[in-house]
Length: 79
Image 1: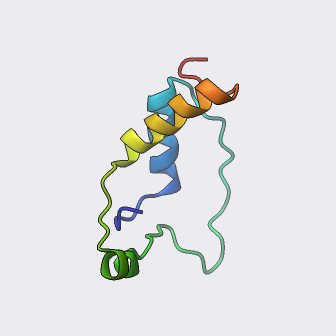
Image 2: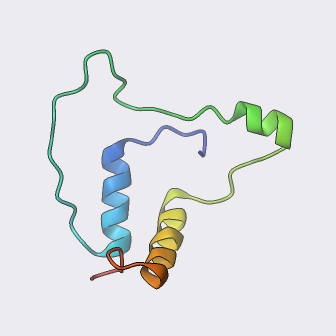
């Protein structure tokens, strides 16, 4: 949670860039009453833990993909 709104499409595009693969997505109509964008409220973590986000989305996804490629099959870049 960076405190910045990120759409699911942004996450998918970033994951595609990190892995070098194209995601197969199925577009669906917006959920009635649902938000087009969501943003985690990190205010409580800031106040109680004196915490600030330190990892950008792309870097975090890259680290996750690298970890998963070492420990599991399926997320290896370009694979």
